[in-house]
Image (cartoon, rainbow, N blue to C red; front, side, top):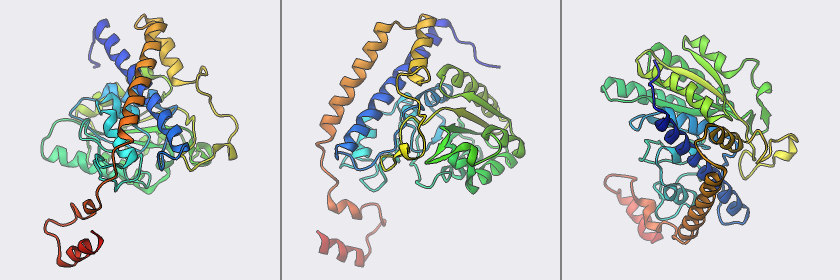
Length: 337
């Protein structure tokens, strides 16, 4: 049974989610612009998927673990990850948690229990299942959420993870952020069956939701999370949204599609969210505009400061390789430094 919340609690929850969406969109656009200006090397944008991520974030608890994929900036923000942590990894600077060794956009954060993103799509799913197995074995609290795109649902790792999670009845919530494109391949060219229907083959429940509506996504994810948390096993949610930008900054979507959803249109998740909250009486148009202004001010300020942080020192290349450095690695270090 779903937890009952008061109207005030719901208002605070929904406004917090919308604030995360606004900040996520603002940060996303800032990084994209900076990459086009040559100030950032590479980026994977998330515009159009903010509602899916906010809705999922609302349904999870702080102790839950997340094995995310490379578009989940809004999810990270909702779960309390400071944008400094995100930007330091985008720049790969001296404050980067990965010390400049990871791909940009392949983020991690101890805040919010976010694990490092692997580049090959779908490979985070077996890791999530393994983590869920370990948590149950150790009797640790919380469930594991694993996010992925529609392209990952065509990989062997997706099927292996689904099967293992089902056989061992593990506390895993699989969330497919179906933005309808696997780089240049539309979903209808990938599979005859919708993603959520594949749950039946593995003996677990599945659900489909409009991923452009954060309130609907939250309610579906909440039911799924409660199912998983109760010990009944894994659950698959397909949230259908739309990738409003390119696959990455190395992609030109105009080469393969000409009907992209535009920012500010009625199908934009941020527009849908604002209209919904105004209709509920939870915010006003003026409050929404203020959130956008505050987000821009914060992002511009943090970006300007963190862009000046230098790259990691060359000697950090040799950190965290061996517990005790080998003789030949010491020689290499001395030659380089």
